[in-house]
Length: 249
Picture 1 (spheres, rainbow, N blue to C red):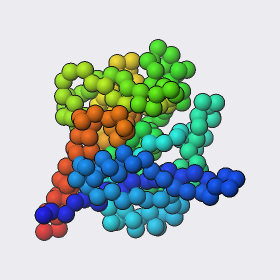
Picture 2 (cartoon, rainbow, N blue to C red):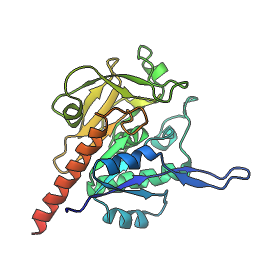
Picture 3 (tube, helix red, strand yellow):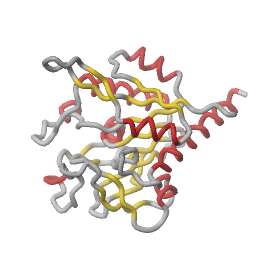
Picture 4 (spheres, rainbow, N blue to C red):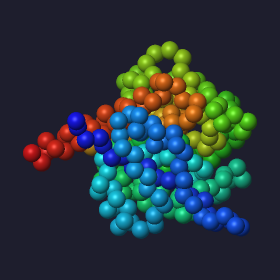
């Protein structure tokens, strides 16, 4: 039996408040999806030590950068929009260190929601801070009354997302008010909502298998097709492992 790849996941963080201690946590859908797709999930708590992060990544075959609250635009030189609900600074600091190290070593990456936005920003792209203002004709991408809000998706057939969903009308779970504006160099758009909002990007770099989805294939409303995104990712990670083994053979 072949070894399953080790897939890291960052975790969320909530600061201490009143009688509640600080704690770190992660939605079960992320590690359940990785496991169902054939990987072994490894949860990484928020860390602010680059050396520890590097040592941890040495042990991993791939990484899933999870969703969450909003990136603080002030960390990228922009003003704070009133709609922004920033990640806890402990998590955002750790996520940015993780993302930089993942990109440096070209570790296979699946980034989801806020994770995709961070991948895009870290690689030189930027974001719309509030879809309702920046793209007033866009359909709703977040329904506060429905955590499993879904909308349609248009995909590029020659892509990982295209292999997953094929032809026909597609609906995905989506809950975001920020979105990609300029796509980072080295990436291309592989899925959009019909209103033009970017919902998936993929690396065009030969040395880096990296995919981002703004929608949430791990959530409770995900379809049987959605898990295929994780399966395609694990297959890509295994291909990378085989390539590395051939290089050292």
